[in-house]
Length: 464
Image (cartoon, rainbow, N blue to C red; front, side):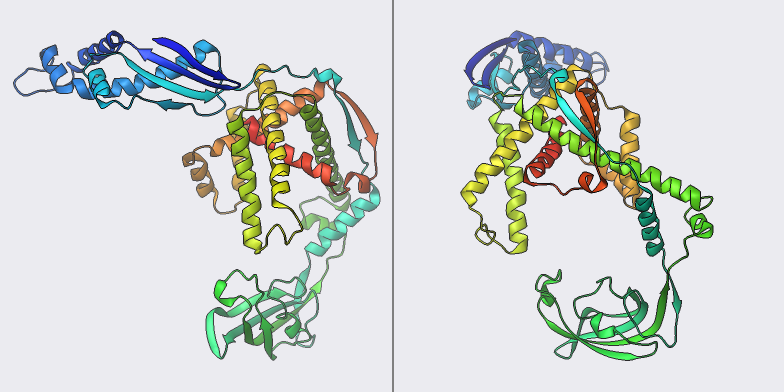
């Protein structure tokens, strides 16, 4: 095999690979020799078919297979020999001369092809010990635990049927209804035994308002209008009338916060419940703190690394971002002008985001590779199990999706890989704990921090 570099422009490379006719013939003859003991040809005993006859019958088919295998093997070997990592799938071009291809298949000429690709640039990774980070630390206060338990009580409200109470916020109603538009019933507008909790906004605007004060057994006529952005196209903006019958009204009863309530939540008593809530809040505070520190770390990594980026990676990342932006506008029926934004300026801004994502992805990938960071099968199984838990009753479908969808497992691996790399960096960085209030810890992201949040997601993609 001969490898010749025909072009080198920045990160772009073009090489020509030549496989000699002799090498290909040797591969073909070896395959024919293996084949003779397995094929059965009329007029010959098994294993006794002459090589010349095998070549006549199977030569062209075998040579086509050999060429494909040879391209796969030689392209990988060419990159390995040159010690280059392509930034994407290399583009391989074959000669278009049909006569040339024919002579190659017949074993009468050398085979050549060209391969074009962009390489991942080589760069020096920053010394982790020069990075300075703050880790925000917030204590769990007793009143915060009280608030959390109160919220638990509010989420575990029970309802008791009442024959005399009129519906109000928090009451649970059971209703039957028939909806019409211009006097005609419409699909999905009729139901029986539907439960709704007043004040939760589970129905279209005006529906619950028309049920306020209703008692069990009462009939109500509800005049409502479907929102313009309603999910059913034929109902958008349409005025409708619902004939509703309230079959049951149940008043809310909030549980008393005591040992008995704690037992219903899986704790031995109220004291143990407070401990459980406190531990959960500590974990949540630590997660928020880590997220903010990670954003600052990614910001520093982005600032301290400056190298040429593979154009195709940047373009691919930008196209993905831009597609999401334009799809959102389309779904909302808006334009850039509606949001008082300039499309050209937005393109520049999001291209900067794309470059940042690619840069951070390459940096984290390089750190992980050079430090032999790996994601174990046990870690992947655990991640898959957690993913399946988010879809109760659909675990089998989730597992099948990850088993059959190319690249899906990589999406599970990426955040695990990223977390391991971040931990590796933080272990050597200068980290100072800073005591803050819960309010400061939970402060909403400003615009700069939002950019850093973009980088977090990008690093996951890049690390993959």
